[in-house]
Image (cartoon, rainbow, N blue to C red; front, side, top):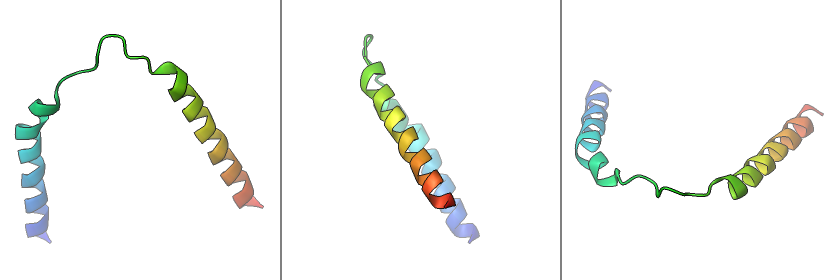
Length: 57
């Protein structure tokens, strides 16, 4: 168990040190995320509410 934890820790450190700078490009200056994301969040909230209400019955 300790060996597996050590191996996972080493892999995370290697990933952070070597691969993070490759993906650090940033977003374009005017990225529109409000329209579709708001609708998607609202639909997800309604779906979760419906599932919770149905589960209590």
